[in-house]
Image (cartoon, one colour):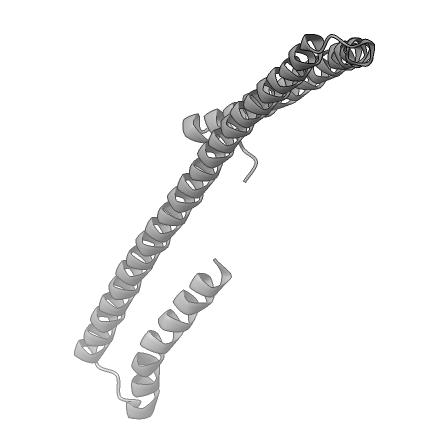
Length: 169
């Protein structure tokens, strides 16, 4: 804004100064000359006013465009974050299910062996599976809660940009 104001002041000064310089040099002022000088001054002032309005309109348009670009970029970033959070949740669910199935298969295979060693191994595998399933479930729940909270925050952030209620920027 300072640049615009300085430009306008300079434009006014430079556009009016030839009128005054010409008047001082001739030093013979008549009514017609005074009228013409006033008329030129009025025209220059009108031109400066037009220039000010044009410049202000251009600045306003550029600010609007910049604001819309920032809003669009923020909305796209929020969408990307939501999508990546959802993908991470799906991957975690898949990996937890695969781990549980793998441990279940190990326990089933160990039970088929009739030897005492196989029975002992099967019992230990079941105990380990049980503990691992419990820990996996706890981890899964904690991760799901974290992902859900992150998604909620991102959705709220996105909603704030989409409806204009977020004044972060």
